[in-house]
Length: 280
Image (cartoon, rainbow, N blue to C red; front, side, top):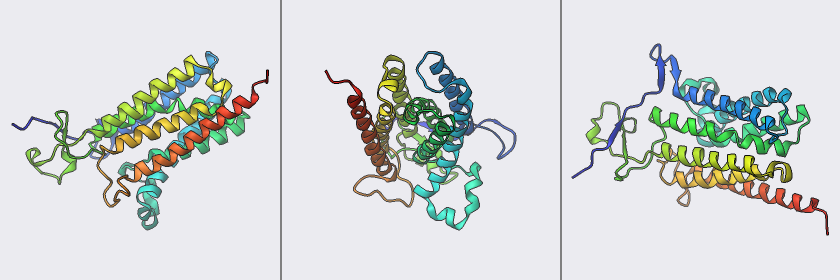
């Protein structure tokens, strides 16, 4: 007997004022992520865990926001649909049509952190360590919003917790005719969001890694994100028009590059710290 799967109808609006205008969960996820980031940044300084003083926090957050939005938006085109941007450059500004890439967001935040650190004359690597611990809450909220929107669903499966996403079939298709799929958005929320949140908070509160090995925590975060992202990609439906290469989709290949960069950053930070230790 076939199990009764949960049928998920997309509901992207918390409050809806018209067909296209309202408070969207995806936008709310970004707002909540930035609010949590601001709170954590304040607590870190207050408890002596961060080199970013209150006078520089608002500027840093501003450039993090700019980097996230511009980098994420640009990355979605460059990594997944470069032709769309060439054919219609104004599509970049139509944010209501969706389209953000986390790998592009990372690059944008990297540029924003570098610029903010330079303006405030703060140590770039240590600031980068702190900023990496601010990312998981926003990722967690964003993946939950992906689920509510009924987007980025997983591959077809028959596991008991599979979900029937009505958005995975042509409009009007009866739910009984739609194949159940992995709720890969929730897998990503747990792995990319919750797991990395717990790990990064443990590292910044219970260790002195930011002060003694600047750059290592950022490297660990990037490598950790890459690993859990690659795991999650095995359950996620491949992007249309982009065929996997050697069994890995575009997101997994981008994450492999992130993994190499993260390992190199962590190793480099460890080696620098070792050289600074006085010889006995």
